[in-house]
Length: 289
Image (cartoon, rainbow, N blue to C red; front, side):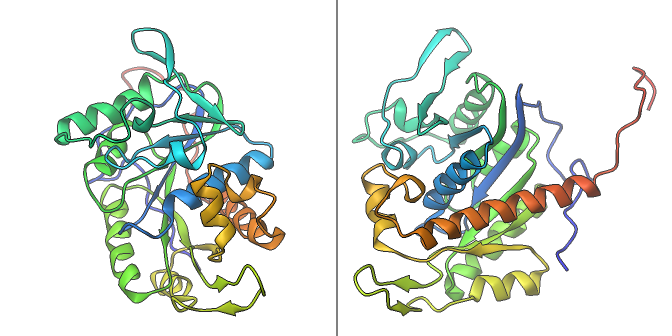
């Protein structure tokens, strides 16, 4: 049985955060290390949720190495109607915001923590996201400033952690899970990316990174396992070309189905989480607790 998510606002959690108008669920998608395909998983989960009739946005939280513009073939300069009013870009029906839309991609982003904190707050509060069922935040690898700033700036519905099957990746996943628990963010589950390699020519399957390590680890940690996604050439090529697996006709149906299954499992965990949360008071009177 999966561990019950921690209640937001418990001692030791982040300070009270302001909700983002119109956004029902803000979900952080993180990883303990780079190179596990976290952005690929984020984009395709978002598109799977969109297919299911939800309104979805992606906030690229990787300030130093944004990849969402390339993966969704959109590098337009965002527009706005005035101070503190930025219109998000759109691609494939998703609303988007990324530092990659604002800077020369050839120049590095060299800033300290306070600037990162300001960027996160502006992306949340100044971007006119509108009515969204889900805002997925693609975090940078590791356990640094962006995750802390995000948890302080907005009430996070929960977090998803992406890993590959190897033990070395799971060591870093454990740190990411510990970070979210420290920040009092409910853990919605673990995704095993590159769960196996599938040859695009002959269909042969090889477990080049091992297989099932993230699922076994999730069970040991009493965390939900949201599913495994194969390593297939079409997913990598489509990402580089700005045509994600869910909308790329070259991607085999069963590979697309694996992302859809992860999105379905994520929604199931959200439903469980909301059932566990106590209802608020029927009447709220200022000054009375």
